[in-house]
Length: 319
Ligand SMILES: NC(=O)c1ccc[n+]([C@@H]2O[C@H](COP(=O)([O-])OP(=O)(O)OC[C@H]3O[C@@H](n4cnc5c(N)ncnc54)[C@H](O)[C@@H]3O)[C@@H](O)[C@H]2O)c1
Image 1 (tube, helix red, strand yellow):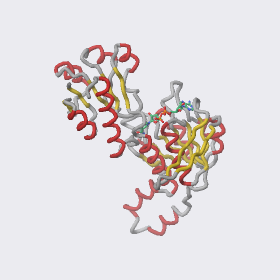
Image 2 (cartoon, protein in one colour):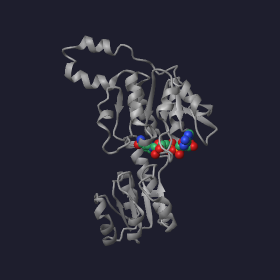
Image 3 (tube, protein in one colour):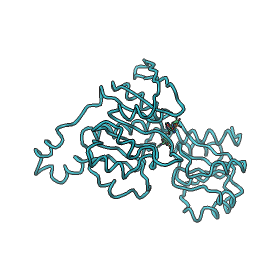
Image 4 (cartoon, helix red, strand yellow):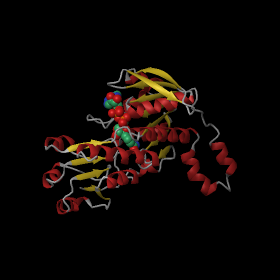
């Protein structure tokens, strides 16, 4: 009953599994030593986040594996179909982090709207000597209320973004290749709520009419979703946030659009060359940056740990 959580596991998951008699190992085993470690320790369940790769050759070399679990959503680091063809259970936690990712979108939007990425860099350096000059630089901040947010990908996270945006008093427009209408329940702290139906529309309309654009689609098989042509359709001074997957935006086209002023600011949590994003992106004054921390909240990690533990116990029928 040994479980290797190679990219870590929240204490909630460790506790729930240990209570049921599992041994949870959270030592990080380097990728090249994984096969030997799994075989020597007769590991039946391997849990990963996005760092550890579970590819066909590892699956073939480790016949003890019965369950592969991904703490999070995207399973690009796992050969899912191949594993399932070998009767291995592949599980993930699709909903556990949606609210946290959606909140990070607004952290980027509020930051960019008030020039925080640049201000946070310059204040420590010249905040005491050139205070008035900096104040002048950042005098044209904007509010989000009353503006139009365009959500591309109206799945779990897109709908959480819509919920927050509606609560803020924003107009929400959305595009999705599968979801035609989403019924959004906007919940208030006192248990009151309102339901708002949002009909999706073609991508082009969203690109043309949004003041803020946020991307919530999976990695696209046919390349970038947002490149030069898509930027050309957008409003002057639009802002864009990508908390989905790195390759969804063409970073070169993004930098060009930022430099020309077409895009006022961007927020990026994901990058084309993770974990070594381009220096041009990292140093750009109009980009608010986070190192793929969309799901990195105490609450999301707690839900992820519990969800993995529940699924493992259910598959292995340990009650
Ligand atoms: N930043 C992070 O830490 C973090 C955390 C969790 C998830 N994510 C990523 O966020 C993204 C969205 O996750 P989710 O849970 O909302 O997924 P989801 O599957 O619930 O929603 C994705 C939506 O995108 C739509 N879609 C796919 N391709 C499209 C296209 N070409 N045009 C229009 N719509 C399209 C789908 O129909 C679906 O409704 C994924 O890429 C996921 O990997 C990032």
